[in-house]
Amino acid sequence: MNFLPPVNSKYLVPLAISLILSAATATELHAEPAEPTTLASAAAVPPNTTPAHSSYSAPASSSGASSGTISPPVTSPGLGSGDSFGNMPSSNDMPALRPMRLDSDAAGTPATTNAGQADAGQTGAGAVSGNIQFTEQPKPVGSGLSIVQALDEALVKSPRAAAIRSQLQITTANYADAAAGPNPAFLFDRAPLGEQVRRIGPTFTIEGPWKLVFRLLATKRLVEQTKTDLMTSIWALRADVRRAYTEVVVAQETVETLNSLYDLASRLLEVSSKRFQAGDVPELDVLKARLATSQSDVERQVGMRRVIRAKQQLNVIMGRKPEDLVNIPRLPAFLGTSQPKLDASQKSQLLPDFSIEPPTLASYIQKALEQRLELKSVNQRMALNKAQMRTAIANVVPNPSVSFGNSVSGNAPGGPKVNSVFFTVVAEAPLTNWNQGEIYRLRATATQLKYEMGSQRNLIIAQVSSAYNNVLAARQKLKVYQEHILADSYEVARLARRSYEVGQSDITATLQVQQQNVAVRSQYLDAVRAYQEAYTDLEQSCGRPIETYRPAL
Image 1 (tube, rainbow, N blue to C red):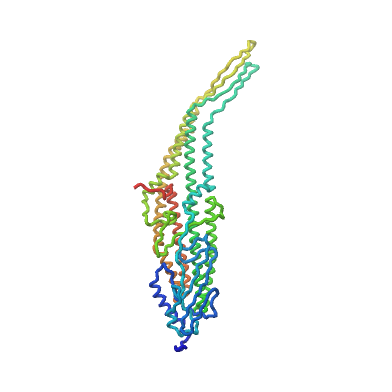
Image 2: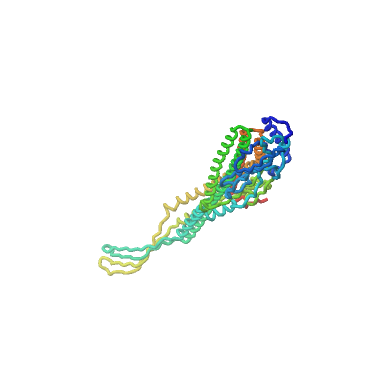
């Protein structure tokens, strides 16, 4: 029997919201950010209007307290879920979104809320009391194809690398050309009427052995220069593989961010539907939440296609089939709850390791001046030019031609026929043409190569300095994001969602906060991309992988 006086129904919902808000605020002050959060809900839902996929327990008429469990599963085709940035499964696993759970309390055991105890006389309104618990606990990131493994596989199996390496065979074929000597000739001289002479015999062109040696040395220098140039092309291919790998990582994190936005919009749609059924909010809130859910779903589908495209591009550049499966590790989460440790595949590759101070600019400049392939290529060209100069000087000495054989003369006008051996030597006199054009050209080339060496050194120093400062700037930006910006944005979005669920803010402000949270995450991914681009430029300017370089102390 109800001994409480009758209460006007229009004051029930505001009173319940204010009481539960105070209880939620007290719980909020003692809640840890890393633990699943709870929220008291005071949405009055009639028993006959329970949403689909939910179980509802009618409140007891004598006490006014009610408990129930509503578990509407929100599924996501093909993607992971959760609000924790970087803590969702990989897009390859394609699990369903984690459901939102409505229990009696945070521990999952039936309990009576403060609002239910205060308004024990609201038995006719069908008030639902309970806690909404979001299971947002991070999951461990699984292992997959690291960036070092992708680089090694591309250099071994990529058709582009094979095409670059095959060019060396073309250059080594010059050894056969350098070893070739002048061919012998056949001499036939016949004058039957006047001189009555006939000469038959071979003609040999004698070449100095030093010419053969100089040609072989010049070919050796050419092969060495070609190797250096091909190494430069392979080094550029390494940068392309790194950029393709980074594109996959950024695309994966972007689609998970869009999936998180879709998850939040779906939750807001469900909450707004409950509050609309309870008469707490107008239907406009439901339409706004539905519109936000549809827009986020479209963006999520586009993001999924971007992941597929990025993975196919990485497969192609590594020499795999486009449809082959590839699993790329996820980036760790930085939500302020704990600082994750970077594994070996992430240190100095995808994200900076802030526990290690970066080396000085002078050490990188020293590394670049020692290892840059462009400087080695200029040195090889100078050595090749010197070898060609020796060959040009050696070619000044002419190659004499020697002919010998049988000679028959009629001994005109009527003498006896003479049969003997003849011997002829023909040698060119280098008076007007002593290969001066080639010699002058090679001298001018040697002077130009000296200036080019200085130019390359100056250009390399500028590239290293620019890339080094870009890495430091991107590193500092990532540090700020990882220390508090991501965690602050996540907390603001969480509190905004709670504020709407307890009736303290409208849905427009809540959706704006959620979109701003996604924008912050997108900016963080842009910072990751900028760091990776700067890191790639620094590695390219140094000429060798940075991970294997330790500057001299």
